[in-house]
Image 1 (spheres, rainbow over the protein chains, first blue to last red):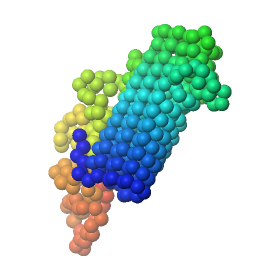
Image 2 (tube, chains in turn red, cyan):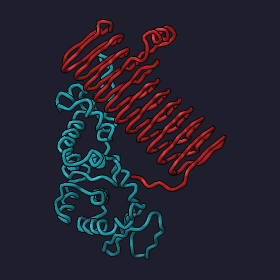
Image 3 (spheres, each protein chain N blue to C red):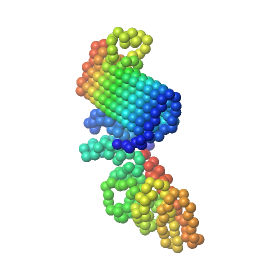
Image 4 (tube, chains in turn orange, yellow):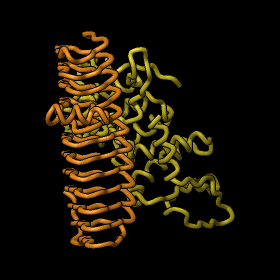
Length: 223
Length: 208
């Protein structure tokens, strides 16, 4: 357990602060932090920008946030729109809004009910994705990967006319994989269940494979 | 220096570990990021690993994981030297230091299966000095003793090692980094080594 100094940052309105080590950081309004921040708890409700790395035990972001370095949070909840230019690491990450990560995303548990765009690898023990729009990651890897389809068929179909609502990845690899509504070049794993509406070039499985008739799998092989 | 590579698929089959384990270890930094080599193959993109390194690492993790937490293992494998201990056998195999320096160290401090950080630096500096040809083996013993007794006192701060010889008698000094030193006329400053640069050199050798 880290020791945190008793100092807090509290921004209500428009302000900026230097980085450093704090107990609590809360931004309600427009806040910029110049430099790296280490804190026990951070909450952002407005427009926030961290010009450096962020490290926190608990983080909740409800507005728009931009982190110009890497971010680590043991517990992270995103209900707004976040851009992270480095990598994101954490224990428990929950995304209900929109997240864009330019690096990798690593966690013990990653849950998404929103939209994510991860340019690197998404790596977590348990990955649960309920796709609400066009999500993408270069690779999705982990032990247990579940990609579900959100909401009513009608709305997604309607949305699908205008935009791609699939979860897209070059490769999805895990021990237990269950997919719906996903596009991937390769899916590799132990037990794989491919549900409705998937487009997959190649599936390599070890123990078990189910393919829903409405999915397109070009090639599959047991290894 | 192209090592032979092993694909992820073959690796998992060979070692019997699961995707979950592999990626958990990667998250815990037990397997360095740059060992994941992405290449496109006719079946799409595949990940490859340097074969010998990864097999060796996984073997160690599997052997040690029952007795140590993953975080402890991460420290063991960390490239950060201050938190690192190294297996003697490993070091010998990589031939980072010569056999002569190795014998000198074991003669002085006895055989050890795991080398601590201080020993590692002492060994490396010894090797470095012996290779210049300006230091004899006997003097090497003094060097080891000095580093063993006093290096810790600098507590990670930068320090220089000074090797002086006067009329055939050698002595070593450890001084804090970049201090000025003046000697009498008859004494000869044989060598001055910044230990921080030796550590850097050692790190790069180890990460190769």
